Amino acid sequence: MELKRYAGHGLRFDYPADWQLTEEEQEGEWTVSLQTPGTAFWSATILPDAPEPDDVMEAALDAYRSEYPNVDIYRREELIADGPSASVDLEFVCFDWGAYAALRAVQGIERTLLVLYQGNDLEGDEVRDQLDDVTKSLAMADSLSGGSDFASGNGDIV
Image (cartoon, rainbow, N blue to C red; front, side):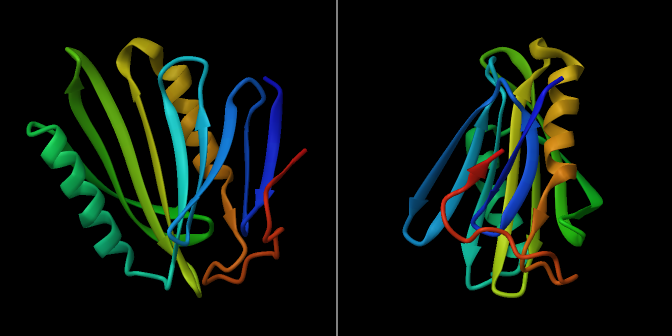
């Protein structure tokens, strides 16, 4: 599988070449999103002022709970961008299909990163594995572990 590399806004990650990448800024928050050829998607949102990852996670979970009352939540321990993260996996029903989502929040020196990916069981394990691989490839320039300096402007795709 051919990969592309994104580097921008202090983030770097690899993703499948046939996925569509978009960037959006809203009220000081940057979101970089990936859309698979199917319905699954991945996003990373940069939250300024470094809110606590547990607070970010609870807000995201509240949104899922309000949309999907029967969501199953599985807490995890996982390193994201070389830092400890608040992490959960979710399972729920969406349009009569089994669906999944993963939420990861990691705090940097000056910002917190929220990673979200979601898909459905019809797309198979390969897409879910690819979404997980994108997350595992993620690096953040201002991680608490002292990551590298990445482009701070719009992303470069190489």
